[in-house]
Image 1 (cartoon, rainbow, N blue to C red):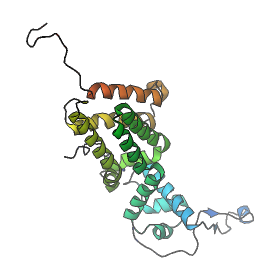
Image 2 (image 1 turned 180 degrees about the horizontal axis):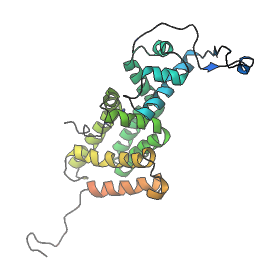
Image 3 (image 1 turned 120 degrees about the horizontal axis):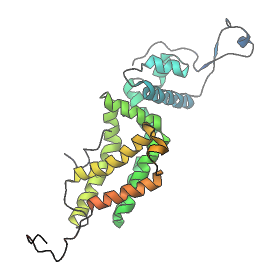
Image 4 (image 1 turned 90 degrees about the horizontal axis):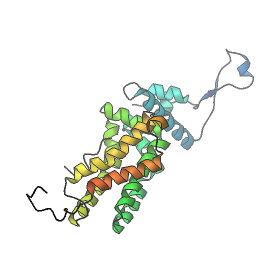
Length: 255
């Protein structure tokens, strides 16, 4: 098993094209009559693609993958399935597009670059705090995506594996390598690096899920995010740092 692989995983076909696309909106005159025809508003291609992605994420996050059909996404967006398939030729394309949008928004590559720079300074506390703040901010700012990912994990959906391969595995592998290196340098105690990765990332993700997915809120989780991160890092350092043996206590003396 690779050092980071224990990290929790956490998440269609063409039909006939229509000539017009977009949410159905009534013209001012037509709105006076319930029987008047609906006129469909056009939307630029990139705007339509972003709209469909947003609707897909919200639909999956609300009803899960087994409870969401492509026709449901199209209907929620006010278009036909043909328009959905025009932008995403298959469900697999749609899943990859959701992750592409998440990657563009959260910048995991930038995070790893920042973590690499901190690792070079051997600033353990700053590294754990930076990772924790990034993960918690991701949950706070994009609840729908993380709820979608939770459904994907529970349903054994392919999106969970795609997310893990693209986001979870690189971060987990980096963290495992760093912990292993710090063990060799004598800064961290000996333990399985994979278990240490679970300990570090699991605590961060669990807090973020409790607060932002399950809505425990301020009454149950009194500290704010920044204060909670400081406390989590204290616990992580206390668990990982190598402790010198107590002096003056002879082996087997019992004193």
